[in-house]
Amino acid sequence: MIKRTILVENKSSITTKNQQLVLKSEVRENAIPIEDIGFLVLDHAEIYLSIPAMNLIVENNTAIIICGSNHLPNGMFLNLNSHHIQQEIFKNQIEASIPLKKQLWQQTIIEKIKNQGELLEKITKSKNTFEFLASKVLSGDTTNMEGVAAQQYWKNFPLPNHEKDGIKRERYGDYPNNFLNYGYAILRAATARALSGSGLLNTLGIHHKSKYNAFALADDIMEPFRPIVDEKVFDIMKRYQEQELNTAIKAELLQMLTQTVYFKDEKSPLMVGLQKTASSLQQCFTGDRKKIKYPKLWNLTDTE
Image (cartoon, one colour):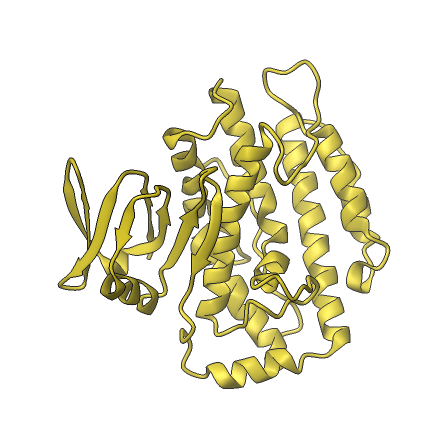
């Protein structure tokens, strides 16, 4: 089932009644069944969210995303009890060997580099060397092929309606970094939600490590999916002259959660695909699988 993403940008109150969220603003009131909602994005300084509504939201494994004064996602709430055998899953994750984590990181970076190469070929209509770069990734990516690929990727990323190609990636940079950062923050929240739903600890990454990062595992697993955001931003740049985040652009970026991704025998919306990937990672920690189940981001022979 495809879950809805609700964006609240006006002064509002959010309460609950009969297993529904009741969103009330100065102009209208709307009731939405809780089981229909996957993400609730709050982007206004005067939003009231009741404790009963908050509990109902997290019990449904809905992610609450809070935006700051710059309108970029600033934090999120997730369910801490979203899996029935969570203690056993935590134990397997904590005890995962270093060689296993290095192998999983190698696979993750290979998938990321391949996806970057596919996207560049798709939007530039030119061949590139990213398949070769992916083939050089070692266990744990000890030679940092991720960084080598990223340098080439952003240097050659086309900029619609600009004289020169290339983007200088900055966490707090100007256009189009603001669009990219918003999209990545939403992708991070979606990944964290999927991992939490599979009973995994977001704080324990397979590569990212920081005592200040509560979502290290989400930061790891989202890496191969980043080009979905990049493609959406490229499409937005072609169609909009606007260089600041507005309601229409944020709504477009949120739509990427329903974009189709392709597994070997099936296709799924991205938010469902992330759940399949998270479930496969859990199985890697138990020893039931050797590889994470990452989808293809595009079926280049598909005419959809």
